[in-house]
Length: 332
Picture (cartoon, rainbow, N blue to C red):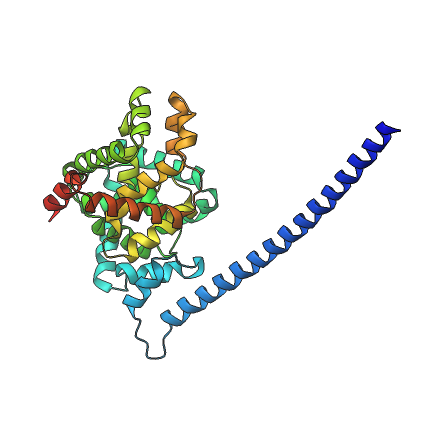
């Protein structure tokens, strides 16, 4: 009988735990529903706020207020209009004439560059299949070729296709995509003289990597992972080819809204590495490269918070920011 008694007690204990677990599960479900409701309400309020800012009674859009709100993320429905205000994309007959002229000469590009652009457009579509029809309709490859024709000193790089691809996810008209693309390149000034800036930015980034994440820096060195296969790409295309589209859009909301948003980019790259350090430590060789070129989704608000903290530390603590300060002096 003693055995049965113990069994009965154990059985009662299990049933009690099951009830408690069911109760906890119900409570968690209830909390989850509440959280979902709060998130939906918050999203609805943010959407209404942006709609109000873009349709004021006096027809004057307060861009300063718009920037302050946009740095925390823009509702998907409003992103195109808000980005146009943030970077100064507006109807302009003279610019449209230049655009048509550039477009006319876009077919003059050499065959090798044409094939590279075509290959990268195919890659972008494979990464973002929902944008396929839009990419083809807008002729993104042709827009990139038009840009190269208008600036003969620039050499083609794959990041251009990914950057214009992000623009195509935000606005619908070919002219608006083209102007937005060029404005983003202008704002991110190192694209104007890439040969002068790429090496410097990469050197600064690697110095920061060694300072903030020495174990990862050592891992990359030990595995023989060339920074040209991932870090240079992250710098050149602003993570557009490596991050999921949703994460890139959220990140660029902040880059475009803040006065020196682009200056945060190297620290965003560091923050991403810090947040996936455990995963990276478990990978080997080609797995590492593949992971860094196909990043998972992140909470970009947390990434940005961490990036700002890293930047603050790098700039405030003596001895840690010589490379950063040197680059800022050279830029100015």
